[in-house]
Image 1: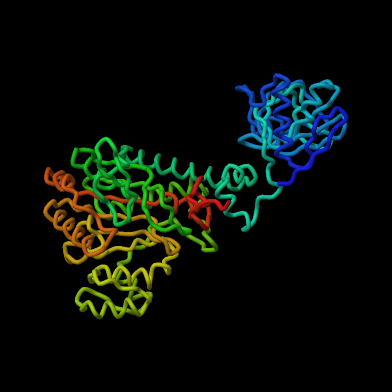
Image 2: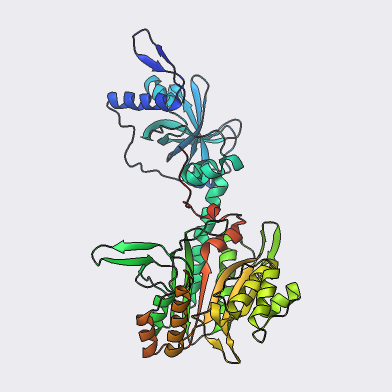
Length: 504
């Protein structure tokens, strides 16, 4: 940043070009004068949004004696000599500040004039509406609450600034009101899900983030070390196994909203840490989880959008009614014309998979191949909400087998606009079967599958005490927020997404 200086008549050096240095000089001058550039608590009387509503009918040119106190950030400044106009923004809206030298006095007016865009101030005054129809606070006094040393950007839009916007979310929120709206919608979505789950009799619980054994999903973990125990732990990749322990303990309906951590790639739908809601209900099954999932998603849509007819990236989505259920193999045939099944030899499935661009691994069995063929041929065709059922056992180590086909499980994934939003099982509660599947996961890990689960002895022991039949479901909160705010990237719905190191 450039900087030029001139010497004033008194010999003091004056900085002209560097706005940060100019502001630093103002800060030093305030301190030298015994004034604090970073003030204390300010008791405001109203939010600006309240004043807009209260004085909506105040006629043009009308003044009141109504005293108010407001606080916020200066977003614009217009000096007209003995009159100055400031635009003040608080958490709810913007309002004009009408400042007159005759009211404030020369000394206070000079201090006000020395303020910069970006400074935080508290103001006392009365409500007026200017002759031009602008609702304003006629300022009688002010306090500097925080001196801004870095000027706000004039423009903060466009693809060229995308990385900076994510990295400096604090500035993005100041300059782009629609970004704040996205995160307000996120709050409403999470609140609506929580309220819906509580209305259905679910208890919200908290389970550990540090796990001694990798489990609950197939994913690459983050590993950390606990010094006191001298033991490595995994940051959790799912909350499933601890929540199901609570069913063993006698809780009937439990859910948790919380962070998960997966040491995997970043793209528009993936971030290494993300938020899920997982829920488990004793005596329920896959049908119960479908009903529950429709319920909380529809509740979230109504809270955030006020309608069940939404648009996502140009696609019209209907979230109303009862969503269709289709099997994985049925959808493969519908979308590609390929018939697949466990009666085929593995080589036939490999040939179909490779035909659609799947890079087949030696460790994959028939079930994994069918799942990969589905992903390659049908996933992106599922625009309207669709429950995809009958997942192969090989890719569903925690789901109950179908009674009529032991190669398949009672599991669904919910797809909308080609992306998975929820995953649910009729939960496996047979400890002998669970132990066998854990051993299969361990064998897969030994042959190179670094996403396979470990063998969780304690979870098997819990099942041996007896877990009632249950349904369980997990949903990605971030993806749901993307859907309901029409956001193209997961970074748009995370306040502080992970980024590569900033170039220096």
